[in-house]
Structure formats: C-alpha cells, structure tokens
Amino acid sequence: MKKLNRKEFQDKLRQARKITVLTGAGVSAESGVPTFRDAGGLWRRYKATDLASPEAWQRDPGLVWEFYNHRRAVAHTCKPNEGHLALARLEARFREAGRTFTLITQNVDGLHEAAGSERVVRLHGSLWQVRCLQCAEVTWNHTVPITPAFEGSGSPDPEFVARRFETTDLPQCHCGGVIRPHIVWFGERLSRADLDAAEEAVDGCDLMLVIGTSAVVYPAAGYVPIARRLGAVVAEVNVEPSAVNNECSAFFKGKAGEVLPSLLG
Ligand code: BJW
Ligand code: ZN
Image 1 (cartoon, rainbow, N blue to C red):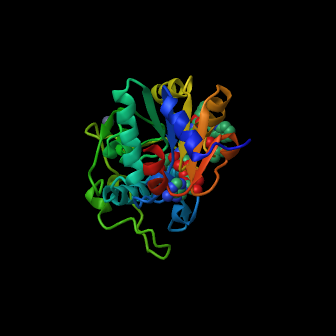
Image 2 (cartoon, rainbow, N blue to C red):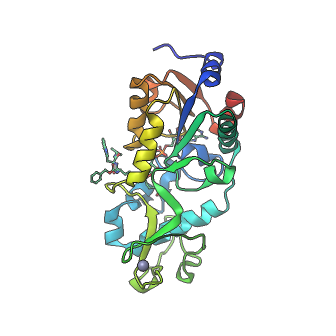
Image 3 (tube, rainbow, N blue to C red):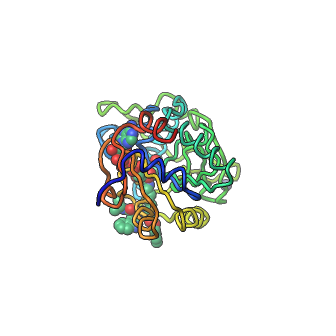
C-alpha cells in the first residue's frame, strides 16, 4: 500500500470529524519512563512483562509491589514531553471545533492527563490507583513509597541484594485487606467500561493515529485493523515500524516528542 505523505496526511487531519489516538510506552520514553520490549524493560533480571502478571503476584506479592513502587517513584519525577503536549493541543482544537477526539492509551503513567488531555481511555489501568483484594474498592494513591517498608527498595540493579517482603509489609486498605496495583495484567479482563469507550471511539473514526506502541498486546493492537477495515485513515508515529505498520496508510518515523508537534500543527 502506498503511504500518504506528510501533506496528504495533514489534509486528512484537517478534514477529520472523529479522530482516535492509540498510544503506548514509546510516547513516554522521552519523559524518562522505560518501555517494555527492549533493554529498558528489564528490572533486575526480570522482564517487566513477567512481573505484570497474576502468577507473579501469587508467587511473591512483595516483589511485585517492590517493582511497582519503583515504577511509581520513577514516574513521579517524569514530566509530559512535547509529544503529550501536542496531543493535548490537538484535542483542545478538536473540542473547540465540535469534532470528536478520544485518546486510548495503554500507558499507566498518567502523563497524558498531566499534559492536559481530557478524554482519555486508560485501557491498562493506572500506576496511581490501587484496588483492595478484600472489599474491591479502587482509590487514587500518589504516596511514594507506597508504605514505609518500601523506602529505599526497588533498585533495578541485577546485583542488588533484595530483601523479601512479607504479607505484613504489603500496603493495606482501611478494611484490613491487602491492596494491589489497579493495573491490568496479562490474562486479566479489561474493564467493561473502558472496552466500551474504546470500541465507541474506534467505531466510525475517520482518522486513527497510532503512536509509540509495538502493537502486540490485545485488545489494543486489534483496534488498528478494525479502524482500517471500517475505512479510517491510520497513521503511525514510531521510531520503527510496529506489528501493525502494514495496516497503516501513513508512517512518520521518529520520536513522538520530535515528530508530533510539527506534524499535528
Ligand atoms: C517510540 C519511542 C519514541 C520507543 N517515540 N516511539 C488475541 C491474540 C493473542 C493474544 C491475546 C489476544 N487477546 C488477548 C490475548 C492475551 C494477551 C495478549 O495480548 N498477549 C499478546 C502478548 C500475545 N492480552 C491480555 O491478556 C489482555 N487481557 C485480555 O485480553 O483479557 C481477555 C480475557 C478474556 C477472558 C478471560 C480472561 C481474559 C491484558 C493485557 C494487559 C497488558 N498489560 C501490560 C502490563 C501492565 C501495565 C504496566 O505494568 O505498566 O501493559 S503488558 C505491557 O504491554 C503494558 C503495555 O501497556 C503493553 C503494550 O506495550 P507498548 O506500550 O506497546 O510498549 P512496548 O515496549 O512493547 O513498545 C514501545 C514502542 O515504542 C516500540 O514500538 C518502540 O519502537 C516505540 N518507541 N521510543 C515513538 N521516543
Ligand atoms: Zn478494602
């Protein structure tokens, strides 16, 4: 398929009535948040994706909390970059013009919201929300470290001599139950409300932007061929072609923070 050039894409963007953006870890890379599927995705000797699983939690919830506490500590210091800001400006322009804009993100770092994006579907949850395993309450929590027991923990160094955290060290709800990160791990269901919001955004969009995702995790990756089949113009921004690049009618190679400000105007 012949790809649209920059000018042709920008014409489509000007004409679009309903735009849907799908983002992944690459959009936050320039803010200092590690991505998943490269060297930055290692924590100690673990792949980040191996710790983001119900099995890892069953085996050692203290280790999983140590990992997430560390991720929260890193994300706490990160600021939105020019890519996040360009997307927030695009949304504001669309809103003022009465056009529909939805940002579906797989990211859990909260940087889109910090940049000013308003209509955000967080498919994989949030680093800043926790869920009680006993009463199921979901609450916002920005405390770093999550409990004093985790102070000074979390070094990503593979040689770090880690201590084992016991059940009594785990963060607790007011009901006495253990709380866990409110994050969607592999094999876990995404929330029905988020799936509905994402499907509604994909259905009938005339333009989809896919930014900084390897597009190998479902259901997010599946939204790209669906949008394409429904007739949307799909454009990708990434430092390298993703798994769905052949579904895209335009490809802008480069870092999101460098490409998006001038591409989106
Ligand atoms: C830059 C850049 C720069 C770098 N600028 N770009 C259908 C087919 C096959 C499998 C399945 C299927 N449906 C479901 C599955 C199973 C599974 C799945 O998808 N497996 C595949 C891996 C094969 N999916 C699930 O389990 C999901 N649940 C589900 O479907 O439930 C259904 C169910 C039904 C009935 C019963 C039970 C369940 C849940 C998926 C949850 C994913 N969770 C994670 C971890 C949690 C979040 C966290 O801790 O932070 O989410 S995994 C991890 O991958 C994380 C990410 O959000 C997600 C996507 O990664 P992302 O964002 O694409 O990052 P990377 O690192 O992969 O890529 C970075 C990209 O950026 C690269 O392309 C770089 O080139 C680029 N880049 N710098 C622009 N500056
Ligand atoms: Zn509780």
